[in-house]
Image 1 (tube, rainbow, N blue to C red):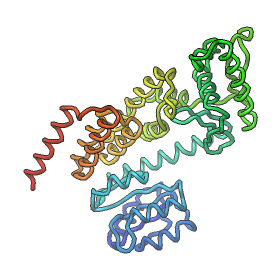
Image 2 (cartoon, helix red, strand yellow; image 1 turned 45 degrees about the vertical axis):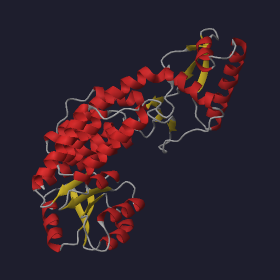
Image 3 (cartoon, one colour; image 1 turned 60 degrees about the horizontal axis):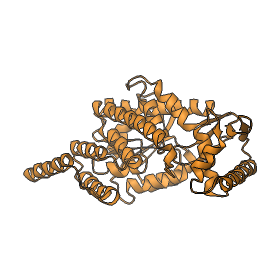
Image 4 (cartoon, rainbow, N blue to C red; image 1 turned 90 degrees about the horizontal axis):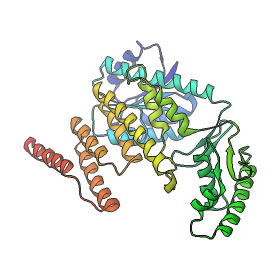
Length: 382
C-alpha cells in the first residue's frame, strides 16, 4: 500500500482527486491539505510515500513545498497536479516522478498509479536482493558499496594508485602483465624506475583497501609476472547494468518501470570522472548501449502521450551525454509538442554554448533550420 497525501488550495479540486484515488486499491490517502505550509509541517509525522501536489498556490509555491518536503523525506515521491505546463522543467529538476495536467483524466491517473506501484515493487525486490551484496561502482565515479551503506569513494594515496586499481578492475576477468602496467602508467620513465613505482603503488593500493575494510586483494599471477584483482564477491555496476538491460523485452506497460530503473542506474560514463585513455573503447560501447536504452524509453513514453516523462529522459541524456547534439534537437521537439517556449529557448542556447566552448563548432544545419522554422511558426501564431 502506498501512503499518499494530497495538497491543493482549491477545495473542489482536492475532493475530485480524492474521489479518483479511492478507486485505486494501491493508494491509501493519509491526509489532505489546503495549505501547503501545513502539509510541509506535517509530513515528518505522517511519513507518506507519495505527495500529490498542486503548483500554483498562494502563500507557498508548490515547487518550494516540494523541496521542503524532500528535505525531510528524501525518498518521498512527488506528483505535481497543475493546470499549467510551464513548470515541467522545474518539476523534473527536483526529481518529480510525474506531472499531470488538470483537469485530471482517470486513465492518465491510472498510468501514474501503475508506474508508482511497479517502482515500489521493484525497489522492495532490489533491497531484498542486495542485502548481502557488495558493489564497485565505475559508472562515472569509482566508489564502493557494502553493508547496505551509501556508495563512497576512497582516499587514494596518489592519483596513480586510483588509476592502477581502475586498470586492474578494467581487466577483472584476467591478469595484467607487469610490463604492460608500467608502460601504461609510467610511459616516460625508464623501465627500472617504472617497475619500482609499480611495486610502490601496488603496496599503497593494498594499504588503502585494508584501511577501508574492503577485502579485495591484488594477487601475483603468472609466476609473479603480473597482477589480478580478487574481488571477494563484489559486483561491478557496469556488469550488473549491462546484464539487466540485455534481458529486457521491448518496452511496454509491464516493464517500463524496469526500463526507467536501469535508465536511472546509469550515473555516468565508464570511469567518466577521469576519462582514462585506456578505457575509451569500453566507455564508448557502454555509452552507446545506454543511449539506445534511453531512446527506447523515451519513445515508449512519447507513444503513450507521456511527453513530460519523455522530456525528463532527454534531460537526463543531455546531463550524461552533453556533447550529443541529437539529444538537444529531440528535446526541443518534445518541448514544442507541450508548448514549452522557454524550454526550447533555453535548450537552444545551451546547445550553442556547449558546441562553441567544448568543440569550437557552430550548431548543425538541421538544428538551426528546425529552430528558425519554429521561431517563424511562433511569430505566425502571435
